[in-house]
Image 1 (cartoon, rainbow, N blue to C red):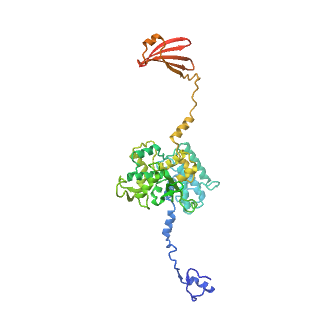
Image 2 (image 1 turned 120 degrees about the vertical axis):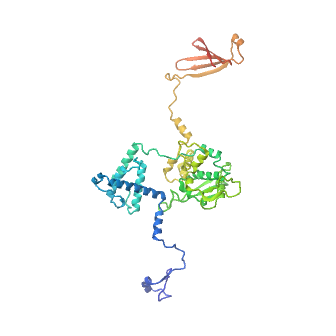
Image 3 (image 1 turned 180 degrees about the vertical axis):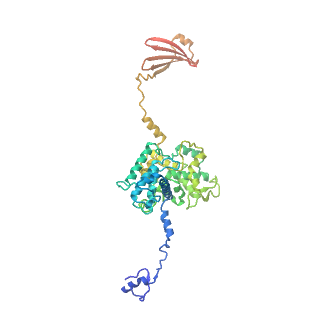
Length: 482
């Protein structure tokens, strides 16, 4: 029988016998030579911290907010005399200790009565966020059976009915039905940013602005976290030998939609490729290739530009320091302010870049799979990012206009002009007095009520002589044009 990885020091140094098995617990264990195979033991404090860190910071913040709203409401409700007359006479401030019927009862009241600090009602989607936050809190604290919105179950049926009723009341009152969403950066906006030098291939600041905006537009970066955690190693300039072109390839990492772990174990981080356009002097591959040349090959992607340092000058173009999070948070808005682009009645933010990505592809006729792939979406939420182009909106409006009125409609009585031609005066008297610039303009005006033919004699003297011919009768009219 082969010896295990450790050695057993016993009275038998060279033989392994069955009776030695009884002595294993009392033997001295000696580690094998493979000492670097495993990590050091994890302390309880570190273990708990790593378990907690698996939850995104925004999710933690949302959960804490939901619990604070519940606890504030519970303390106020317990001070109300009506609470003592309820089926359950006290609201559990620490709800994780309550039983299921009690949670169902008080959650139904909570969802009807909770308000903002100023007393205004929460929108319907905020009520859903509150529900999900409380559910996460309970499940993280030893209550894995809590599923507030699970269908076909009677455990929280009263709460589900109360939530449904409250959301319908709010929608009826037009609360929360108009969501504030980012507007896309239009092609005209983009042209202004280029024409005014905000986007520039000659200064470090202009180059920084460009790579930030086109990271949003090309790769659909969603929020500040994706920009903050970006690393220079995620970009490669490659050669596509089938097209004989250079390509920019982006390798995604952990994001909102790809977090790894058990639930996302089969989801791979996205990879996006953008091919060069040699006919365009503003080529994206050239842009990123130039930027990557001036920053370290690994580490934070966004480095602070050194003033308006010209790229043609010698010296460092970008500092070793990274651009601060607060600065990145308003980077696109800062570009618009520098270009003096009017943002009134528009919601321009960093999210506008992602909206521009999805909207441009949508209006260009790409299918949903292509839009999802480039935008980094996994669900139908991509539809919330699409915005109709101005031309498409105008075409839709024109197509839905009422039909034009018919010419023979007596109620409208709209005249039309036809049979227009010019001639010289033919009578001898008119010819003797005629200016060489004088012409007779013949036209026919037709409407539902009558039909008229006019012969107008006009000259450079700004006097119009009009003869009206109808049914054999001739009327002469002098009309001053001046």
